[in-house]
Image 1 (cartoon, rainbow over the protein chains, first blue to last red):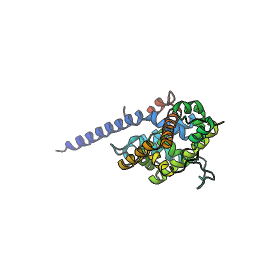
Image 2 (cartoon, rainbow over the protein chains, first blue to last red):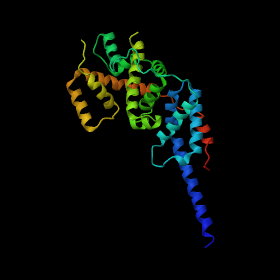
Image 3 (tube, each protein chain N blue to C red):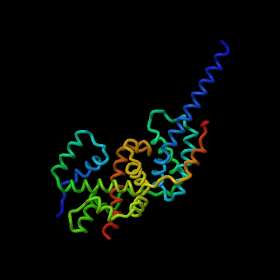
Length: 194
Length: 77
């Protein structure tokens, strides 16, 4: 009788070790996707690398707070966005109202206006907007807007996941996304029509 | 040349692009796109722009980072 207890204990420890290894492998398999989002949330490659390392360090320490079967990528990104905030990125108050805010189709309309044709295809987009201009326009967005746009447009998270990651209501995700994309297009329009 | 009656569908088309609409909203968006040349062109533009932003803004993980992350593991691999 007395020797069954260490047996149960041993089995529990073995199961836990196996779960932990599995968690770590699943998390590492997502590293490239986590990095892609991180890279667009911060200014430099070095910062992104640091942020991803800190994220994995914390994730590996607190792996037991992850609920298996839930969205691990979102769980990792939540750690990452919190760490990014903790790092004391420059506090930047987002103005409640931008003075001039153009509509959703501002860029499209500007491009039609500039070319004098109704052509709005992929080639035109590629021809007019360089990779640098996209990256610069994204990084020029106020933080709150950028976080949301990057999570949804680069990370391909749903509105619900983005809301959970950023700990904001889904309606706020939608409005930040909407405004963030408009600002992005305003930025891009400057290049597209120059 | 100005075109204003589509303000309401701008909002709808965002959700449509993000695949976040309910079934009935999808039907509403699609029937609008079928009938409105102005919005259809712009929807296609938004779609291209979204894809382009996605592909151009993606930077792959630097070589060596995976190794560093692996070293952070606590479990016995």
